[in-house]
Image (cartoon, rainbow, N blue to C red; front, side, top):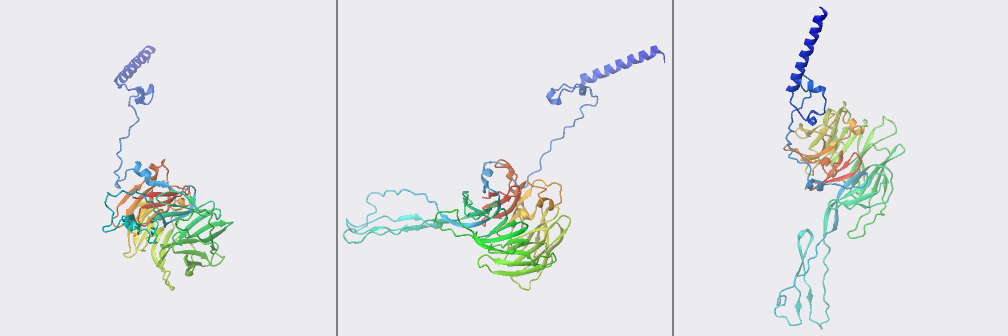
Length: 481
């Protein structure tokens, strides 16, 4: 190609390119810089347009629970009770003086209140009606006898009005001191001064009058059973109570409280060797009677004591390892080791109060319920651990802390070891109907605090739900009504 033709070709190409770019430039719609996300001049000449794709708007799925987070009412429902990390707590019924609003007496109409046929020296005061315990009425009649007969007027004082209300006692993890408060009026008061440093676990029984504290002394697990002094109605509350008690065998591997909180069951080794049998003993907290009811060559058990006729044993769970659950009657000396569930990886369980239903989970944290009478299992459609749940008194519904997000991990190991922490919503699941609903989302109230709930407990009337936040061991209360 000659030099002249080459120069002409270059000129033609430059003109064609200029025309094409000019056409594309004036074809682009003008947008404010804010919409383009900047002022990238070169990007305006992109012949393929803007390659940033705006995702279509996605409508969130319908909330089948009917729950709407937030609001003033929910803020008032959730309260932090303890001002310190705790090792354990209990709920019990406590008597207190009833607050009665005094009503000023109303004057009687003139001429009323005079006893018919009485003389000027004889008069009877009107009948005074007072509110009694439980909303009943109590009458008090005061009479003034004629003067000069030597009889002094007498009045019988009415007993003070009282009521029984749910109350809480809990053990401070750092010192072992016990604190208490009523559920409806959070007024934390110190109950004892006995120092037991670094209590890892605490249980209460016998309507809050007995306490079991577990702590480490070197590498030895110490278990202390103490009796709490009784409180007297109307007496001054003291914080100098001393807790006296006894010690159970060292290195108790597992301990559980009976459904009525009158007894405990604990497991300990019969010797110092790994091949020694594990021994299971019940202790009555009222009369201190001990009875051995169980022994096994297998030592890795987690026990539950749902009622006085049933003790359940579940193998310690781990991801990918098949777990098994058995049950015995502690009153039968020749107990039969009945198999309930088996061959479920990462098995964790929670039996209802009458022993007919078993809530259980696997290493995928899928929650199911097993009917011991029909031998049928039902999947509940939520993911959590049974120990993040509690049965109601009747045993036909459960309240659970259900994680909003479950990441990758080896469950339940990752959660037990503290590698994973959850942010829970509180759910109620009706076992008969299968209906589930969200009761509360702690993250949306009280400053948005995330709660990984454990040690759930409920009062008999289902008015309150209590739980401990695994993240910091503080005690919380959720009002359900």
